[in-house]
Amino acid sequence: MKIEQRIDEAVAPLREKIRDLELSLSQKYPPVKFLSEKDRKRILITGGAGFVGSHLTDKLMMDGHEVTVVDNFFTGRKRNVEHWIGHENFELINHDVVEPLYIEVDQIYHLASPASPPNYMYNPIKTLKTNTIGTLNMLGLAKRVGARLLLASTSEVYGDPEVHPQNEEYWGHVNPIGPRACYDEGKRVAETMCYAYMKQEGVEVRVARIFNTFGSRMHMNDGRVVSNFILQALQGEPLTVRMVRASVSVGTDVMEVHEMCSQGNPEEHTILEFARLIKSLVVSRSQIQFLPEAQDDPQRRRPDIRKAKMMLGWEPVVPLEEGLNKTIQYFSRELEHQANNQYIPKPKAARMKKGRPRHN
Ligand SMILES: O=C(O)[C@H]1O[C@H](OP(=O)(O)OP(=O)(O)OC[C@H]2O[C@@H](n3ccc(=O)[nH]c3=O)[C@H](O)[C@@H]2O)[C@H](O)[C@@H](O)[C@@H]1O
Image (cartoon, rainbow, N blue to C red; front, top):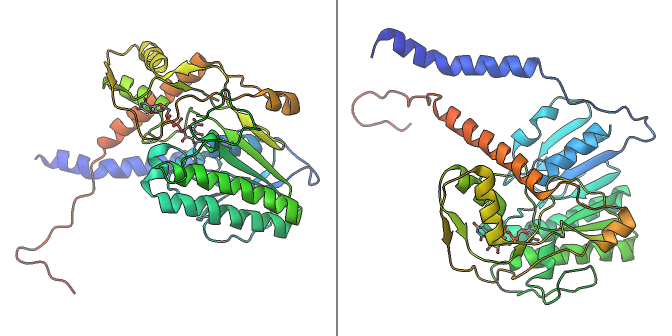
């Protein structure tokens, strides 16, 4: 290898570092409203570096509040909130909610938990601990400091529903020992804990049962249907259809919730329709591949959002195709980012003298 080429290779990572440094020095934050001391809240978001949590962080920061994000980065990523790092209203703490947390806050948005089936099934005991011990810790904090707490729950509390569409009065149909139980039952007991703290200790609680979501900042390995299909279509791989049931979306709407509400897009589509739609939006040549159904996979789900509409005036505002197109753009950029980063020369292993390595 020529000497110039070797120098170039050695200097490339330094160039990259200088560029990052320059970027961080010239960093401008998104515009933030000014709130008086009286209106400004100190808000804790557990799981605030995740897909839904980071969008909520943006909304509350831009509204002018002080936001503390707590994340253990199992599925969350620093990249999702890096545009706020250094802002005087923002703090990022690497912490696992399974351990107690002692801080002063006015409101808690408790979102910490893996949410996609592959992620929550990866370590079911940890998923249970996060949703039970983690929720107890956050409710304990809410009680101590007099904060209001919102729990991000899930339509999975309905299990494989026998009632369609699902409203808040339906108690659900969950297999308590099946592969999804760590999440379904974990969230069910988390809801139970919220209402016990409300009744016994007077803690103000809110519960949002969020249905299947997709949007920017989803992890590439999330494994939920929309991100899987988009990535497969973009990479020309077969779209893996396991089920022909209904699914729903909330795009990236940030929701305001009071009391208990089911929230999602009541527009219902089969999984095959999603596969075909995504394939055509991506203009992909991918095939559609039919796989066997997963165990305990719910047959149909659709939220009845009448209560959310009546009490909060909430309804989804992002049309399906618009949400899908934005998500497609996001994943295309992610794939590009990944491909570009592959060209950065990896640091070479330290050269060793010939002979056996010594261990001191
Ligand atoms: O629906 C919900 O309420 C819940 O959505 C997800 O659960 P799920 O809908 O099972 O998530 P997906 O993995 O996106 O599955 C949706 C459907 O698509 C199918 N699917 C998934 C992935 C895939 O590659 N192919 C495929 O056909 C699944 O078998 C399933 O029938 C999350 O686990 C929950 O956090 C969320 O609340």
